[in-house]
Length: 115
Length: 113
Image (cartoon, rainbow over all chains, first blue to last red; front, side, top):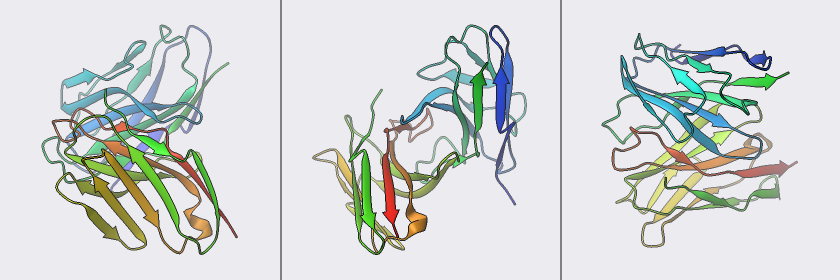
């Protein structure tokens, strides 16, 4: 079955550590996105990528980094520069950035906690 | 960035009743989408309505869009316990969502058995 896989489901980070969240899709989608969700809040866009080897900052990119070396993969690194990283992170993909006819497919999320 | 805002923030109804949630947004859109999120899970796409459409149906879901008022509503008819979830509206920009959808804070719907 096609879909998006995020791993791990739960992640604990110590102060000052960098951690990487994995996002893999087998939907052959061009565009991929990372969102952050805080309790009781909506989603805020961190980074997005419309094509391999290209990505753009979203609304809250500070303290995060991404790469898009393969179409299927869009990992997110939460760096030590992100002062409040505890949140639920969601990865999504869409079939084509030029077609406004389809919704996003989301992964099941990674819950990151700073300890 | 433009943002959708859902209303109410929380809604509790009896099973079998209809549930209506509203969304307002600030700037012009190409389309508006509704998503559902069960607790601790990812979002699931429910329905997309284009700016030139006024109403759309999908099963027990009915979505309306009023671009003059910059608002949309999601109606769930004959609610079931499994409909308990948070519901989000999302709006796109000039590139049809290519530079990321903007989500509201959601309506938390509880269906009482």
